[in-house]
Image 1 (cartoon, rainbow, N blue to C red):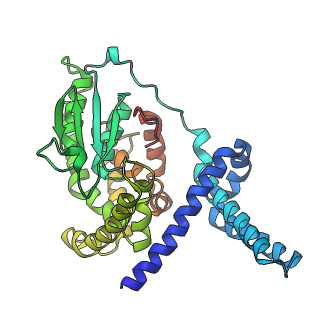
Image 2: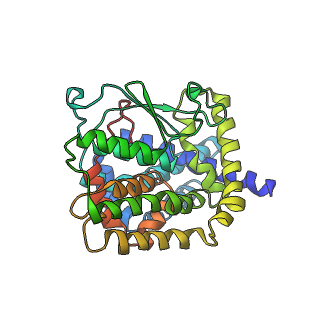
Image 3: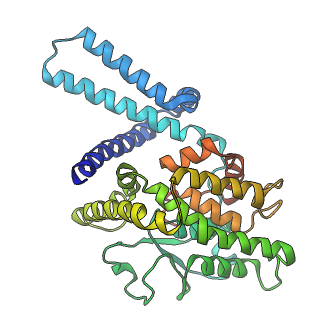
Length: 352
């Protein structure tokens, strides 16, 4: 088992490095590169990348079969970087078609002055809260919590995330935080607060997110050791952690979450096939929550829409998200929610 795990981690590390390098190449290259290559990438990014890679490698080897090691290494490096760029371009290709950053509300208009979120970056519950803050255009500071020491929330007796601090007032539990934010932003006059059957539907599906959907998504994130390893990419880029701490968190987190998902969560929630359970949940959401409307909330999103969107947005760079978009009809709803929520209003300008 440990030998297979080490092999999976090694492969995942190479994939992660390729993605990071690809992002840097695309960021520094003309935007036209993405625009030109995007159609092929969107239609079959994997085939395009593999075909390009094979062709490039074949032509390079044929042209100089006896190159010295340094030259062959340079060719391999170029191939690696180009492949990474094409993979990343496929993921970024459709961003130009989406609305740009949703402007944060001026603080003078908000019912509070200071908002700080203590989080794990890919935690589904934390991402529910971030989606709510983004939806309302609320500027907020983000503090990445060390999963091992949790020293960032040593001030709190509550040792889970998310923790939201508004003007010194601490709020715990994602559903309570969302309800409080909704009440504060809608105001005492009750504008935007749903009543009657609409309120019952909102509560029902909000509870469904917490009791079912999140617990189906989690085993999908950590379905294989490789996917578990890639899910901790963020820890190497975010948080005020030292090099040793980052990699300790990544290794321990990936291994422990993979084992917990396979041996605890799947059994506890009656999940046999992770992807099949995910697709069933999304079909249930689209058929019975959204139905014939644009959103669960009808013509405008309610807090259940925002919660489901937040959980899905948390995995948008993972295989889980790609498979969900390809095998269910949730895509059009997700695109509508992207426009409604807008981009992140967090103060560090990091994309959620």
